Length: 103
Image (cartoon, rainbow, N blue to C red; front, side, top):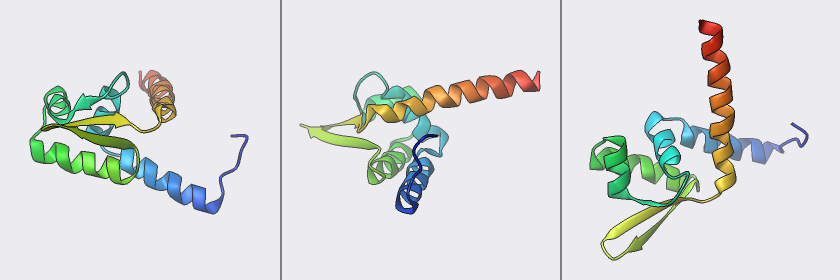
């Protein structure tokens, strides 16, 4: 890492990583990689209850990871900063390496 994070940035980064730190929230981010989706579409794609989806989306929204907009009766979700999705590339590389070590 070329640039060092300030103490305030380290604290903020920790909150973002905690915000991502749940399988369902990671699944939401993965679903939103290509385009925005409605809450119902996310719920169906991830096979969870409405209450579980609402809870996880609230956490992602509170950490400014996703944004939500209402259009009529539907709520649409999208990633606030597409650069954050690079985390998935890094995680995939790490997990590929990890699972190769396990074999």
